[in-house]
Image (tube, rainbow, N blue to C red; front, side):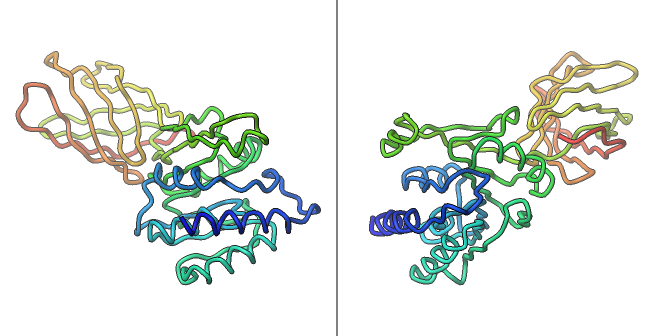
Length: 284
């Protein structure tokens, strides 16, 4: 494609122009291969309603591709002023400057709260340092996509491999990994559960990123949760019902409240349930 070729040329110019005295703590400037750019945007399902923020945006190729191919809006930040100027010039040339912008800025000083999709190609140390900021500032459900490097114990929701023979001389690998996370809602702590026709229940949760464990206290009986998982704002778990059947709770987390449905095998109609937070225990 003409656009890909143009970005490849921009990357070469940018690489030649990169100043050696720029302190790039996220790693040296290495352009993301066009096939990986495509895979990152596709894995995040970027569309016209999205705002893409790229931390360490280099020549701007990820945000520019999001705007030209997926009609998204976005912003890139980089500490190299020459690359920022190059990216903004490309946005003007491609006719998307009204929808994307690039700034010279430290990634730690960047307001990421606008992002619905956040992209990264940074070294592991920077990824780990950024993790608390992203969990705190990004809204639950925001998609994060990273090229090659991950967040350590915060495991990706999905990973795909992309053929990148052009990286072999640099990394010794013929492929790149593209990782996807959805920022999980914070549910750690105690909740009061109310369901139609029953006394209030107590739900106690211990969360670790998108995974959690816990128990439901009903009539002084404690039942351990099964199959517990959070997908952005969507929570799901199962418990043994009072009559021996398996109750499947599915709901949407909205800050201090959860609302959803309880399904029981053999029961034709789902029951509604809500929960309100009693006590938060710890961060994710």
